[in-house]
Image 1 (cartoon, one colour):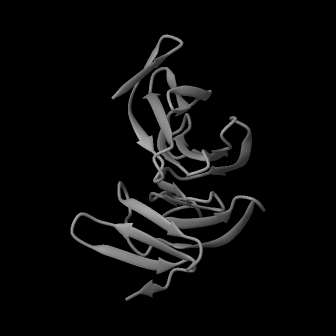
Image 2 (cartoon, rainbow, N blue to C red):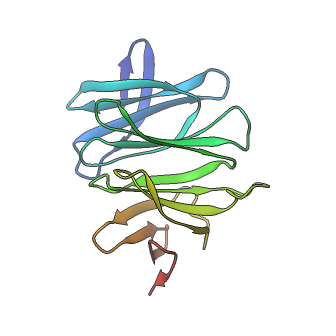
Length: 176
């Protein structure tokens, strides 16, 4: 599936779990990139960004984007509402390798890869409305490329690996 807007061809959208919104990304290490949010075929917003690499979209159209900056060890995580207004931004001194947003957009999660900084191999959980960190801890496992569901009621992260599911609470305790 693709979507063409302003001369840019976007492919393979990320669809909100409720199916209402589609978030497209275009990423190029040479020219940068952009994201495009649509609902029922209508463009809600487009943003130029430097290398948007990991994205997710909530059921209310709020999006999270993890992108690599100019250096291979710097990245940024941004959250935008369905109109493209920036709600949250965090600069990191390690590459983001995964991110997710809860269906109600109250909580975001992102993970970093190994670096020589204090952001190395960390899980981050933030309250998007307050802009405050809920928790941050050493990665208990690598969730690179894994589908993730954030359960805000139970305060849990549910990671769906190909052959296994792992659930941890917001503070890093494994739920059996």
